[in-house]
Image (cartoon, rainbow, N blue to C red; front, side, top):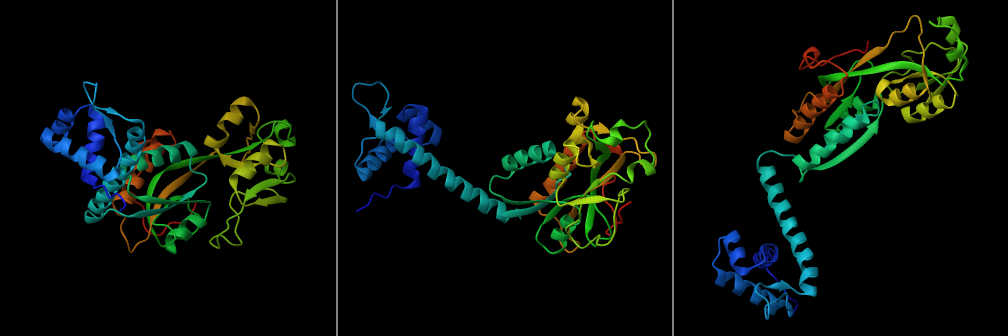
Length: 316
């Protein structure tokens, strides 16, 4: 017959290993020392193994197989604790999973800090993360693919919005690009004949419309990171979030362009969810943590940020 240790026996085993004695394990578990000794003896009998050396030592010492079994016991107890936490969270309305859709324009350091804190705060909540851009984020929210969206807006949307900060967009080019060599400020006539790199909205929300496109000739890309790489190689000019190119501007790998009719744009960032559902605890926590993260990132002054926006909003 295969051994079938109980979780109670495994908890006693781990307590003895961690405290170093039967009496200390008893105090930790609020059990009599005789109960601890009996539990270990039964566990060893079931397994057919000696987990502790008792002869010739003042305190029980783990055997070689005992040390290996200790890691298995800890994992099994951890699974039980997560199961209990998940059940308790469910009774308190906590989500089993959060589907999150995030615009790639969101500063990566903010995203990483928020998700690290999320993992620590909600160890039982699974996360589904999608990184997109422009209209894909509200699309994911509207069609139920995401419980929560984080990004900017272009066009009309019928979803609930909470403004959480701003994203600064600047125009730039490689130092060898012809536009970087012209006297400042640049006029529209200066930039129209040079290829502008433009990230295309993969959703249908802005079909047939352009935002911030000044050049007659454009290259259309599907992601911001590729645009960044091509700009650094001198294959065009365009706008990118300041946080993304700050090191390039400081080191001279990119040069900020001073275009006469264009000033640095502070594009608002929103947390989005459907009108017919309110965020559950983990999603609501994410909204507040993203707002705080963007505030610490110095993209806006916290006092300037209103709590909520109307359900319908057009891009500037």
